[in-house]
Length: 109
Image (cartoon, rainbow, N blue to C red; front, side):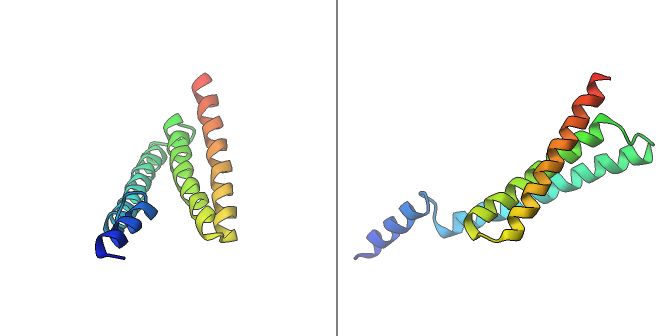
């Protein structure tokens, strides 16, 4: 096999993405999740400081953040088959659904 054939096979196995690109996407996803978490925490903290514990924004922030992290954990489970990833991901998605329901209820009041 030539060098070019090896590279082409590697790219096709990695969905047209080389190892460097995969690392960049992975790092970008981690940083985006962290920034999203900080933003959600800021929204929750602001609502707490303003004594608005039942604010729709608080419920929405929790729902979004838990949905993101729960999905990440379930994707990790599908690839790594680590049971704790499945349990934590499922729990976070259940909590996200609960906060989404609380958000909808708070909007309908």
